[in-house]
Image (cartoon, rainbow, N blue to C red; front, top):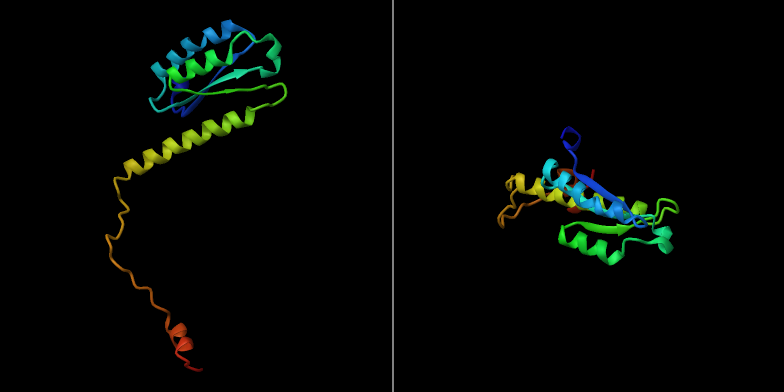
Length: 136
């Protein structure tokens, strides 16, 4: 699908107070895996953590699903902004790590260490005169 093209990260969000939204996560994950880049970073996000008293999806169930599917996991509340920024920061950090590693791999060691060679750095002629007591 065209709307996945170029995507490097995704948040799969479900409502912790509605189990049916969690049940849809498997379908959305399959959709991502079928159509997005293999290296896409996916985070499972349980939203509405402010509704703990109405919880229909146990945190442990969601954590287990995330672990089994290689996803990171966090619970948030858009209402009171709990962990919202953190979820984006963690996803972006993981994207950066993957992109950086990929860049290093594709550089094919283009920048190689000097292999033990010593590079001498000398002073400029003006600095040589000053340090040797020369005068103007």
